[in-house]
Image 1 (spheres, rainbow, N blue to C red):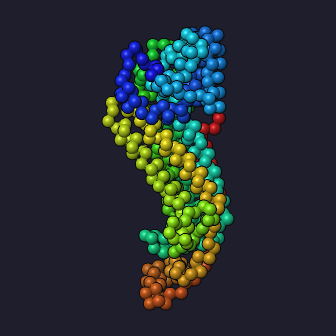
Image 2: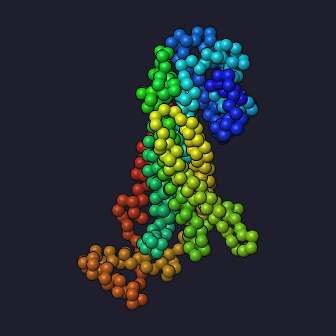
Image 3: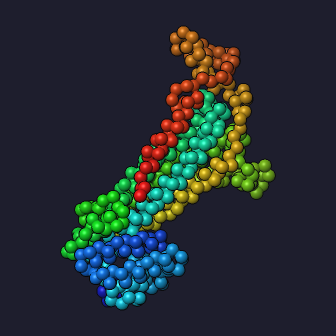
Length: 432
């Protein structure tokens, strides 16, 4: 197998297969970023005299051709080549001869891979940001549309107080604004340039790391070259934490939908084609989509801990364990995209029950409303509470189902406009 580090000896096939693992497949996600990072690197090499202007032009043209092959699906990792970093350098050497061999000057595969990963994660976070903003808009639209449709509220799984669909949809919209702050934090942590840190101890070449930082549009370098390597695992953990925050929100929403679709509740429904049936019970309309979203979000939630456990007992510097980070995080990001998009897809078809509270089952939702009415009329709150409780116990309570909630964030004052401002502030990152 062709490797960048080969010094004339050959690892046994068993060792090679075990240590490479899934890297060849996962690395394809990094191919375009490897080329983008290499283009910035050679521009810097030319600026410090390690490449001529002609060599820079030749290498840039060849890298652009490889990038086009990646974008059009023509690029592939040959069977005897270790990874995409080796493949790109091999193609350059095969096509350009000795000029292609100069591309690796001043860097190690350590900082090359880390740069690729940070460029990849930065783009992934921006994609998640845009997907969340779209879902946020759907939720806010539903909140406004159904702001006057009442919904039972529950605590401890028991009927509690009146709510509304507007309040319910709007709650998850605001929760996503909080999640966006986590995404934003991960983005800023990721958006630092490790290129030039080499194997973690810098280089005797007079590298211009500020130049590559500018060319790759990072916010700053990882200044200390050891700290650049210390960001391995930390960057991935931050992304997993942000994804986990969002996954927790989607998980709870999916759980609500599973419950609300149950005929015992009957609060929401979806077209038959968005539900599944039973092999034995002809009446069933199962919430399989929401159950899969819920399950996948639980898997996403586990990633942060798995990454922490993988990275927790290594001294500073590179270790091959870090390769396994891709096995954990890359599939999680794909699941995250799917869960966000599928949640939005389902919400476009949601139907709400507008007459839920007509049932006497929900009369006790209004006990607190009655307590508050009596308190506003002058009765001490504790006396009002006791008198309503006695009426409930004696079966004499009669619900007045009118609701007058006016404070910020309540049924009658959803503050959706303010929540939109909050989301705009949280999502204001990564704009060129």
